[in-house]
Length: 176
Image (cartoon, rainbow, N blue to C red; front, side, top):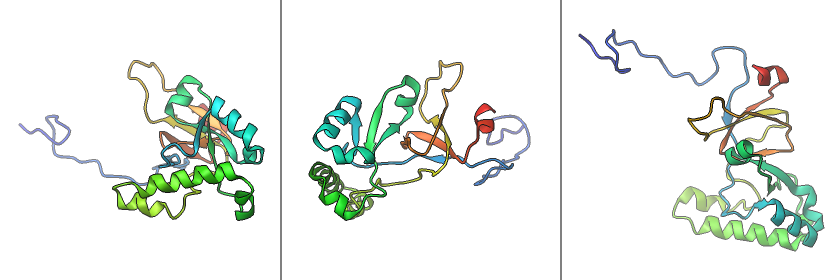
């Protein structure tokens, strides 16, 4: 007699949107998005070769975790320059080359918001990295999986935008 928005034969009852959890749990948010044309990212081999040529950059290279890396235990890395000073940058010419490549990539975009990001070429486009432990949940997985692989990481591992993260998570949250 009635087909509601959920395509069932019951009254029109709608579930409203919630922007915050309905219980006392940490919120889920998106990981960090580089929009860099690959300028910040390295495979393990690329990272090792880069650090060999630019040893001062080692402290600014962190493990980088996206859906594929989490699910398949792949080692990837990124330049994470949130705490770098101008003097440190000037002492690392290969890092400066990477930053310039990011700037050029962003400037070449058709999207105005991406072109504006070229003013900040040392930073990821969207940063949500917690200063605490967090849970990483792949935003892409297979429907054939009987479970979703989930990781528990410290702030030194940078979560990509292909992961959802739960900052300030405890081992209890991870267990649940």
